Image (cartoon, rainbow, N blue to C red):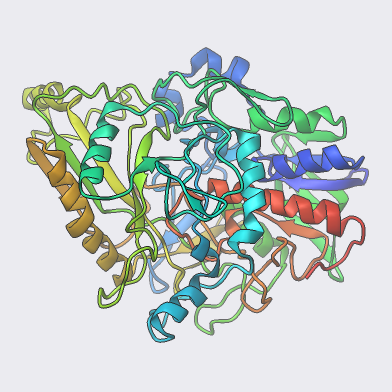
Length: 586
């Protein structure tokens, strides 16, 4: 093992979180920074321009994803089951490389609702202390919407997010989301173009009296230059967003919107193929990180400040491998690291097929659609329904690529041969779909820990996920499907309609979303959180752990916008509070 010269700041992972923080530190200080990223540095040119439309390489073989042959997770639904490793990509797709999962994201970029930040106290005040299930561990974040708004604004301007404001400084604005919290400014860009099939959803929902608005999007409307002078190009609606880097530089991403500025400081070094496996610490102070370099050799990088901003799973795993914070014990209900693991609840959806409408489904973008929030979270009265929570309902056409998207086909369609070919020919371009993206509450029995049986390529324990849906989510999905989704599907007026609304046990096998949260949650109470409201470790004062790992629960939106806002919040705390006087901030 070699001990390298000390640096001021070391970053673990270099995706959205740490590129933002490094950029802010580089603009405001002269600190020397080292970023340790387990994957390579890819850029629009030449990497994505040359082979962007190689669906086999990127979508099927997972060129941009974590290498599961070297590091994966194990999974079980409940504690009395044996956890088994995920050998093939399924439910979620962690990124691998500079820019992280935001390189291959779709571009959906939400702000959470006001009451999401005081979620437990909101429900107890509205419905009484006995309303929530006994085993739920949802909790307040320790911050409010007002605390977060300026950081959302900074993130959206840096990444050129487009959309339509629904609440400007407390005034409801026609055409936007009337349920959102008050914004200080309009979106940096106006909404992008919307595919035809999403307008059928919009028209039907509006006819029923719902308030439909454009989904907030990182698919650039036009040529946009951010505050650091970095430019997004206009989206050309090719339909190759999710699982792909953008070949024209039109999708908001750290490699376009932040990393070039961070490198321009001259004080940042990015080390590719560097896999961090331990934070070394003593007496409540982190001294260095240990990592394997490209050749598999162990290296130690000392630093005064360490910022962990990897994917949620690796944030938590690194804390457990390093022995920082008390591991969560679901039996005793003690400890914090690994607690409140959540996912994303789906299952309520509808597809409508037409005989007389051509959709051009192959033309789309990752976030080119419409949404409504009447049945999201606690925007509707849950008295007597037998469940809490809800979800955002949206129609979005991400494109219909040749390998991934021969369907959806109507019920009872042939599954092979000439009958299948004829059905695909008839209906490939004649369907419109929409679905609910629901919240995933935290429960005592859902958590992550280190697996006692399986190890990665270097001999370190894998992370184990224990997770399942509860009756609350099953009732929520069924009710949403039977009510607003069925009503909208019928109003869309197709020749064939299918509504889905049942979830049983969670499965790791089919893709659902890469929206994983929790395990190193933030809060104002060290007995129920791993980091404080500045994202600083309660146990190690010169360690910040930032990302979706800090979410106490998933409120039902894509996490990226809030991850970005937390990155700006942590950067503010580090630069303006921690660096002038290092030590605990809470």
